[in-house]
Image (cartoon, rainbow, N blue to C red):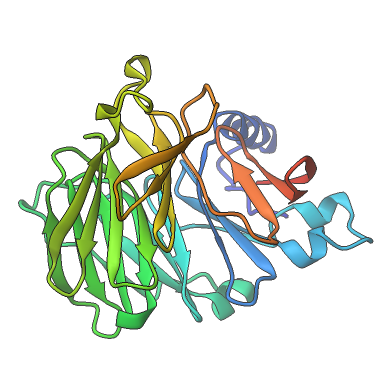
Length: 296
């Protein structure tokens, strides 16, 4: 993909700058388009790159197929989280969430549709938004991050309708129990908290690090990832990656993984992607084999 080079910067210097930028890149977030054919990835420089999964997975794919079809500057700081609705790509950075139309992105018309900022305690507070979660039945968006609260936003009006308070440190991750109007949140305080969206009340707390079989004090108490499937939850971070039965608040399986985890999901017949401290997104067509990498 070609980019315009400012006249004031010699071409050689710009190439060196871009090489250094890629070397120090971290990809924080990903989201698949509503049609399933495109993948958006957000990095620590505030850029969003969009890749064609259909082209990259084609039997006739070339190296150029693994490059972005479009890259644009979305935020001034890192893009910590992204989700997609049936029309929009939503991205979150420091203190705000923005919306972009997928149809315009794919036409390379990357113009911000709207932006919203949760009602923080002071005008000087600009906490990072680490997690976004769609609640389709309510047509709402849940945001959470550095201010230790969950903020619910009505996607129809753009208004923030309620704040859920209970965490004592910043929040890393969110998950939705689809069969009930409950949201789970995990954070630096080491707790997974369950919230009833009808009452905006906390209904269950699991302090994972207090369970001896899960605790790993040398890694800390923070919860970096979680996912749910009906009455089951898997979570990890400082404590070991563990499968829990939610109704009984009981850990049932401890997974023997040494490193802390930052992402987890219940796997079905899907194409999986993984990204982190590099400019690459690894694509897996099965769990035992990395098929190829996409690159900013």
